[in-house]
Image 1 (cartoon, rainbow, N blue to C red):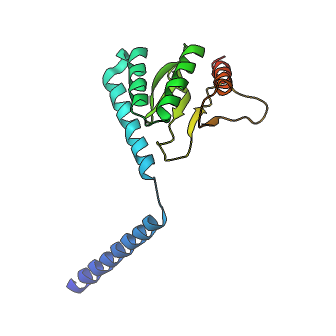
Image 2: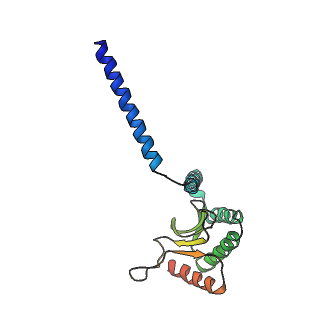
Image 3: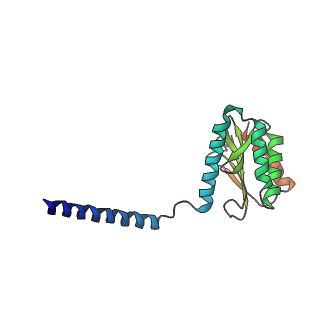
Length: 170
């Protein structure tokens, strides 16, 4: 009887060893989230926790101060782009409420993100991004862009962004 228990324990140990090896092999093949993605996820978790603590007390001013602080912390030239994008959105869509979303400045309607600004440094890309979510009313046929690369803002780009933001909330 003792032999049966011993051989069973050995078999169980071997199967655990094989499972651990299999899990390690899978983990080594799968890269998972990048460091930048993990940071964004953690920022989103902090945003949700802060919102839960504040409850319904959160106002448009709280979100705006958080967005302005995030923009101020951005390196140049993203800071300048972020300030201009914020001003354009505030001017052309005053009904949108600013707030942070995955650590990025975002603008919401009824609690749903309509558009956001992602600085180039966030994911170490060569350009910043102005993105629109599916709540934005930008539909144009069967296909249309939902994100725009930004390297600089001239009067022409500012006019185009103004038109896009107005259309998104129309």
